Amino acid sequence: MEYYLLSELIHQRASVFGKKEVIKSRNKETGIWDGISWMDFSSKISRLSEVMLEWGIAVEDKIGVYSQNMEECLTIDFAAFAIRGITVPMYATASATQIRYIIDETGLSLLFVGEQFQYDNACTVMQTCKSLKQLVILDKNVKIKDGDTQSIYFEEFISRKTSSAKAVLQRRQSVTEDDTVHILYTSGTMGESKGVILKHANYMEVLKIHDIRLNYLPKEGLSVCFLPLTHILEKAWSFYCLHRGYTLAINQDPREIQQTILEVRPQAMCSVPRFWEKVYAGVQEKIATSNPLIRKLFIHAIKTGEKFVFEYRNRKKKAPWTLRLMFNFYEKTVYRRLKKVIGIENGTIYPCAGAPLSDTINRFIQSVNIPLVYGYGLTETTATVTCFPQTGFTIGTVGKVMPNVAVKIGNDNEILIKGKTIMHGYYRKPEITAEAFTPDGWFRTGDAGYLTENNEIVLTDRIKDLYKTSNGKYIAPQQIEMKLSEDKYIETLVVIGDRRKYVTALIVPSFPDLESYAKAQHIDYRDIQELCNHPAIHALIASRIAPLQQELASFEQIKKFTIIPTAFSITSGELTDTLKLRRAVVQEKYKAAIESMYEENK
Image 1 (cartoon, rainbow, N blue to C red):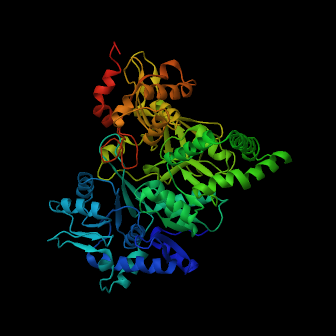
Image 2: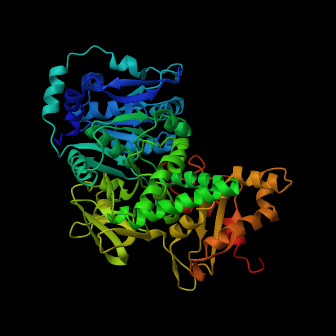
Image 3: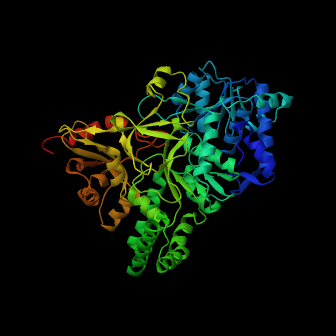
């Protein structure tokens, strides 16, 4: 396999794949998936590079992208790389205040915006921002405000007459591995967002080490681009797919992902654990409501798959012929039917990372022959540090350390990393950058864990998230939350207990499941608030979490909980743009409810 700088990647692949489809997107008006060929994509990138250069983008100038997933997001990336520009992606859900911070810190002057929400926020920022000069609007349905002379639609922008083809080629030929390609801002769970500097060299290494680990993948395939392209997992995976010559199906609206999967039937798709948690909950509900015969068949199929996968295939051992026969039968019937309902019956790899995944759910997914590849990484490591190999993986770990990546355990069991995928620092934050590395150059992840004899990582928790009860016992909230969130009635669970006598929790229930239960049990209520406060609902949740806590030590078990009638969200501040929990925000917002659980008379 040949490896190219990102500035050359698309053009080189276009010379090989020509008229083959590289990207497809659902047309909002017709609902039909429209595609673009490698040759046309290459030409479009070159065209935009010329326009950007003539607009005034100099070497190392910053170009902002504030949009949901769209084909143009990738076009902008590769056009910028070709003229040695640096793209600065921003989450589509980010507020005006959040993008102002990024724009001010990077000093970017050109910003591409997606839909009306992003345009309106960007307009507000542009009124007082010194550096921002031009907005380019990707969605033609956006209504430009009266008096706005600094905005232009993408199609008009890219159609400008230019005479810079030669200058673009010269700039492109001068690109080196040390050129910066991105400043990716972290979601800021522990304070202000930090801009991670990633270079061509980082991505070159990503392509190489994934080719080694994923050498079993077929030559052709289609991957759904589901996670935000601002997220390092989706960004790095999409670049890897393009390196392999795969087609990318762009899912623009996260709410449409189930429809998208059913329509395109992908071989691959990056996701976070929440996606698979919902799949698991749906299957468990199906089993629970089936007639006894079907339920027995489901359970036997899962047990058969578990035995075949974990006792034989994963150990590279030949299974008894009777087990192979039964597994193949279920693969053509039960497993395939399950996967077909979701739209993943053609799957070859489904990378999953970004948060802890329950061992129970992971084992189940593997048992029904879904090729889930669980892994671990950070923005600062250009995504993957570890991931499951095709065989020989261990449930309970986040996978085997990637080739050419070094990992060791430091003080407080902190996971330390070295390798060519490690970032080159935080933008304009030299002191914080220095703190992120040990004196001898190891990157400090902030995650606690240990290495197994098979060079796999077991995560225990975020070091800063570890709680110490007033009795001196340490607890890892994420592990407890992951375990209890397996239940279908629990959407989100937040463990409380730092410097407290005992552990409590705030629980956001799955409202549809809660309402279905209330209907079945003839529970009367006027609104969700009253339903959450109902004694029968409290008893239900208590009965659901009790068996899930049996494996926890007594001091780790939740003694009291409060059911929250409102879902956590990005807009209300409890979640980051990558759907990670902002514990400080949650604890402050629900301070009264938390204190109530620790009152002596409660």
